[in-house]
Image 1 (cartoon, rainbow, N blue to C red):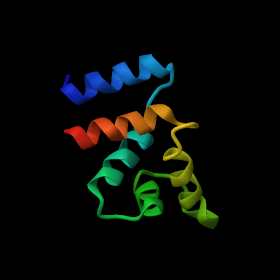
Image 2: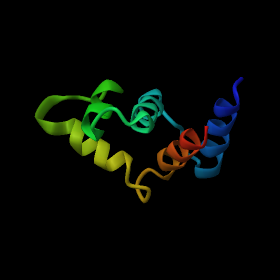
Image 3: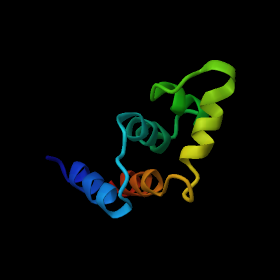
Image 4: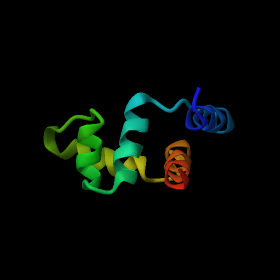
Length: 79
């Protein structure tokens, strides 16, 4: 198990919320910085219908709704 996987487990336990594969993939694309927020969500597998990607990206980046995703992004940036 990698250091990042261990940190993901710690984040999940701390916030009592599981990081889904889509959330992890979104975070990786977001930290990469080569795509728009909506494109990161689309690449992670979120629906591209009617602007859902843009809405989902906005929600995922909101630390009050998804604190575990924000913390995971912070950890990815530190790597």
